[in-house]
Image: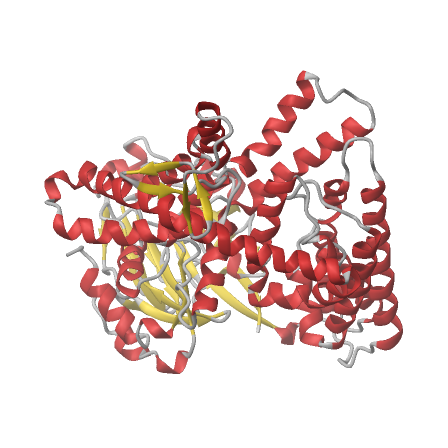
Length: 630
C-alpha cells in the first residue's frame, strides 16, 4: 500500500466517488478536480481530514489543498479513481462507439503537434520542388521527405506508445509491438513476393476469411497486410496485449516479472495480432473506407456539403476521430486522399465569423477575446473561437457551418486532393500540392475565400450583439490585500540575489530587508507548508491566495539555527499572529544575506498583482494587492 493510498481513497469518497470526477490535474500544492456535481462533495469532511489543509472552489475547479507532497497524493488518487495519467481525464463509459472515439482521440492527441509539424515539412518540400528550388532526386529533397514522412511511415510505433499508455500496457512493450508491425519482411507484399519468387506462376496456397495467405505460422494460414502507416490494427493489438499483461502479472512471480511479463505479452499478442486481429481489422477498415469512397463517387457535392457542414460539430463531440484514421490509411495506401478535403474550409469559416463578431460586439471584454481567436484560427486552432465566442452565441456558429458546407461543395467538385497530412490552417494549402501540379493548392485558396466570405458576411449582416456595452470597472474585480509579514525596507523582487526569485519563476511579489526578526501572518488563513529548517513558510488565505515567505538567502543550510516557529503545518492563523522569529544579527554574522522574498505563488490565478516598493513598511501596512475578476 502506498504512503498516501488511504488518504487518496478518503478524498475520492468525499468528493462523491470516482464516478463524480470529470477530470483531475494538480499544481504545486493542490489537487484540482473538475467534478460533475460539486454538491456531492463533502466540504467539511475533507477539511477535517488529516493530510488535507483546506478546500477551495474557483474557476470551475474543486480544489483540495494538500501541501508540497501533492504529487505523491495525486499519483495515488489517479490509481484509486482509475484516471488516465495523460490529461487527467477518465476513460469514458458508455456504448462501444463512444469508447472507441475516446480511445482514438486519446491515442492521437499526444502527438498531434509533431504530426502537424511533419506535415508542414512535407508540404514545404513539395512547394520548394514545385518552385524548382531542387529536383526530386536531390539530397535536399530526400532528406526533407524523410523527415516529413517518418512519423507517417512509422505510425504503428508512435501509436504503440500512446495506445499502451491508454490501455495500461508497458509503453516500451507497446513500442516493440508497433516496431514489429513495421518490420519489412512481415508486410503482406513482402510475404507475397517471397512466395512468388520461390514458386513462380503458383497462386496463393492458403485462404482465410476469403483472403489469400502465402505463409503459415505453426500450420495456421497467415494473411499478410501492409502495416506501415496503418492506424487501427496496432490499437486493437495493444488493447489485447494490455489484457495479456494484466493476466501475466497475476500469474508470474514478482521477482521475474521485469522480463517474463513482456516476453509473455509479445509471444502471445503479436502472433494473434498478425494471424487474427490484423487481418480482421484491416478488412473492416477497408470496408469503411470504401463506403466513404462510394459516397464521394455517388455525389462529391453531397459529400462535401454534409461533411463540411457538420465537421465542427463532430470536432466538439470528438467524433471526428472516426474519420481522421481513414484519411491517414487512404493516404498511406494511395499516396493521396480526398476524405478530409471537404472540411478544409471549415476552420476559416469559423475564423471569419469571429472577425465579423469583433466589429459587431459592444462588450469590450468580448472584443478583446476575438483577435487572439482569429490569429489562432488562421493557423488551424479554432477551439478558442468555438468555445469562447461562436458557440455561446449560437447563430454565428451556424453561419460558420454554412460557410464550411459551401466551401466543402466547391473543394469536392473541383477535385482538390490532399497529398500529405498534418499542415493545419493556412499551412494546409501545401497539402494539395504535388510535383509540378499546383491546381489543388489554388483550389484550396479559393475554398478558403469561399468559406471566409460567406462566414463573415452572414455574421456581419444577420447577427446582432444582444449584450449591453460594458467596460471593466472596479466593481467587476475582487482585490485581496496582503499585509507585510515583516517590518523593513521594500525593494523590487528582480533585485533578489536568488535568480529563481528575481526572474519571477516562483511568482510575483516583493523583496524585504527586515528591520526586525519577526514574521506575522499577513491575512487570515492556513499554514500550507512549514519547512523543517523553519526558514520559509507557505500560507493560503481563506480566498485561496498562496503566499511564500522565504527568510534569507540559502538559509536552509543553517538547518534551523537562529529560527523559531510558533505554528505547524495545517494550523489556522489570524492576521497579525506571530508565525516565526529569527535572529537577524546571528544569521548575518554566519555569512548569510537576510533579504526576504514575499511571493504570491499562484500568480497565474490573478489578473494583476501590484507591489509596493521603495518604501519602509511597518506591521499592518499593505505590501501586495492581487486582483481577479469576480
